[in-house]
Length: 352
Ligand code: ADP
Ligand code: MG
View 1 (cartoon, rainbow, N blue to C red):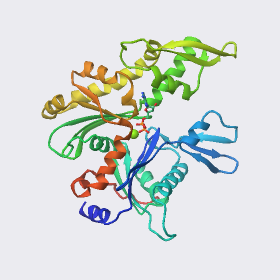
View 2: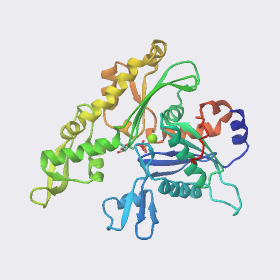
View 3: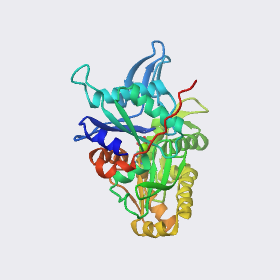
View 4: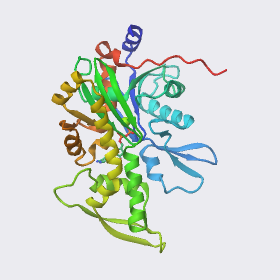
């Protein structure tokens, strides 16, 4: 650990990357967040060339001609397409720290990884980051980074409870003394809620809608618990029976019903973790509360529902979408105090 601290603190060109299933963010030491883009890459399959990355590529999703694919290289929090992930990391690293000279060394990089990924998956992240031009790579578990980003006192001997709801996974973790005491990862999060809405529109209205429309509905009028004021918006799609475009009105109640099962599963995961938490830590958590991070934390009234179901006050961390990268960034800035929270990757034997 001391070695890590010494080597890392010697240089200025350090960056932190949150490579999320839905969004990727980059933090440059001394500067703050410099990149925040969707984790989407558009590729021309005829030539194998990357056409666009991030926001520009996301706009192409569902709108591309046959030979262009807009893909998300991370599935459920782990790398599903190594080469595309590497290209994306290369683009981020080049954009965040342009090289002054051709021979300048690449940056040292801290990358967030979901809790509980295998050694093989950790190695994939490390290798992709190294071949994308990093000089050295350190890993941090995302729930830990999110908690640090939320300025929770993770290094003290008290319990902290963090729920990170991203695109692919919901991670529920209890942290104390700079480590993860207990954590669970559920493969139900923001993407699943979008799928639920697509299914609902199909089953209920025979209406075919795309993923972006479903996400816009979720963000626009979705909620986890009944709202004080009714919300209603027009929904456009293709009628599956007639094949023609159609517009109907949907309300927050419809969308809540569509997502109900998945929201329930997320809440049950939180409850199960509360039940597994050692009593001493639970006492701290009852005072401090449950903290929600990740984009999914912004689902209306999810905090209310979790408070009701767990009887523990629940709140959303400030700017939940950036909590992980800000936390990893804080580790970069304060390595002396925080280097212990980095996750050590075992060195794997290369395959024979
Ligand atoms: P990841 O870490 O997996 O990249 P993020 O933390 O960036 O994920 O969160 C992305 C998820 O949050 C997406 O599924 C997105 O639809 C969802 N999201 C973003 N804003 C909102 C909102 N206001 N209400 C509900 N969900 C939201
Ligand atoms: Mg995330």
